[in-house]
Image (cartoon, rainbow over all chains, first blue to last red; front, side):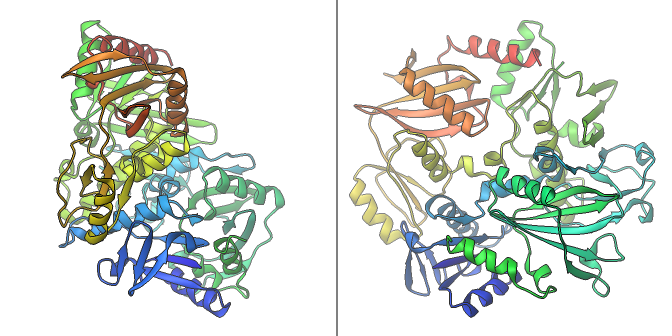
Length: 281
Length: 283
């Protein structure tokens, strides 16, 4: 039996659940928003809608728990969620992915400096704080958040505050106008998708972006698999840019929204591989 | 140059006093200084990083820093009161993301911010016990549950226990005698003396708490080896391991990546600080 854990608003969970049901796989959804309501955590089992699910009956767990704000009115909810997360982390087998392996995504620069880089390069990056932006070297830059809170990647010269000081640290990265490639790694398999878009941040190019299967060179596939393995991630999404024959890595997402890509492709190979991984095959 | 990153905690203060008394120079950086005063230019390429922090007349080039002693494990939101309310959590998150990178990119950080510290799992006793057990340590029985009925049944089975209202260990070894609606964890209460083990890379100091005092103590070589292996597995350079000594063995109760050196026997403390200082002076 496969366990999916997260919010009922999570599109990835909804998409994968439908795929698993269509493939006659036994699946249980644990809705984190129903904790203390219809979801209870016991020492050796979950009780969901009054049905007991022993921890050792799950072949695999897709862990997509979203942190909730600390100031929610009921103090028991964050405490209950941390207990749930802790149980998943310590008592269940084949968890994709365990919480500590996802932590590096909280600091993008830290993450890319820890990667084993052979044929994949890292873009020139600069962090500035309380410093004039004239310190930026003479290349074009984008800027984005350093941490895990999503920001819209924007070209620096198009930003209205380009001549001001930054008071918090801001990550500027060399603008690489190449091909955007998302690589999903599941165990030892890579699925590469090319995203054609006219915008720097294709996530916000709602009208014109196009998704295509991409034939990633074997040497780059092997390096992506190695990156995931070194980070102990069974499943991850790696953002690459190909420019003038070189591959640059932007970040590794340990909780990838893969359905966003697969919905625009003509197959469901990522879901199939994920189903196999969660079935412990 | 030695850098000390701390928020005025008692351990760092005590260590700095040791450095002052021996005229070993260091630069103290607090969260308040970082957020409000230090100008940062930090460049990263495939060849490595070049980082300059400018603070008043002092220019800190990380290539000249020999060691970084870090006791920060987060930055308190109180330091961001100058930002509008809706931006505070974002700015706090960005500063922490930067500091994690900077501390970890530097090769001689004691301690680096490991993924277990970043994710918070190192503060959770179920994670600590699972990891310690997998490393060959004896651990107390423990249970976690939302159900107060189940907690009561498990408490009866244990007979002697410590209750917990969170999954985070708070260094409290006191035996409990009641369970309330907030109890979500039980840890087996074990009679015996408390033993603190402090590790700095390949050095170890063991202190036993007995009869109201502290005494230097020696654990077996195999126990020492397991301590080293465990902290290497967690990618820590310094750590505090807390044991209870039962009739036959040591039972691990807690691991901290931010050791309280003052829990060590007083005779050890100068040796610990001397070791730390030597490691921070030599890159």
